Length: 298
Image (cartoon, rainbow, N blue to C red):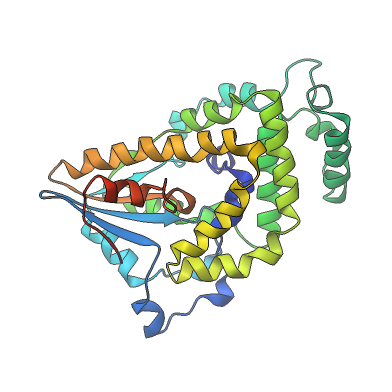
């Protein structure tokens, strides 16, 4: 549950997947662009890597340029340290994710949404008793995660988890946000927003398999425009504009400010954030460029 919680943004997770069958380990693959950028100031260097939160074991080892950048850096910065169990209040998570007492999902969403949830979860073999106690935002995460794991992807092999393990006991680890912040963000959505969040997750589950190949190729070749075009398709639904603003743009701005603080130090940083946060005019990379920092895609 702890690692599942850190993997929120369920109906955008499709943007950040990789397929091991497309991963080439030859010299050409090592020389191509990656989904990582180098940002510099007079005193500091910050590498910013777009994270893939669910991954297959077979994609490792990663491109040498990524691993070399990590080795050169003194500090690892992630959205949230999912391996620090002591920082997670399990009681708070349970309260935020599940309905208390006689409250149920059925009482908080429309009949149409509830019927759709019953149909989809029934086909997945999930007991209705468990489904009915989950709040929409957490149920969306649960369904997305189950589907990804069916396709062979696992948070255990996620990019951020990979570097957290490598850094343990060797490098200082910092958080751009925290697990509490992320839980509060999602659980703070209104019933209407949470229902919309769940509906979009159910919709995107149906196209997950069809979209993977093009998304993978875009990530592997460092094709930020390709990822952006897919993100724009999702963002094209005006009904989720407010949710998208909270999940991406507001967080992009806050994380950019944190990175700018890093650039004012004398340390070198390796920053790992969800790939969707890096692309587009409101993405972290463009924000750093507008602030005047030299930015180079590696």
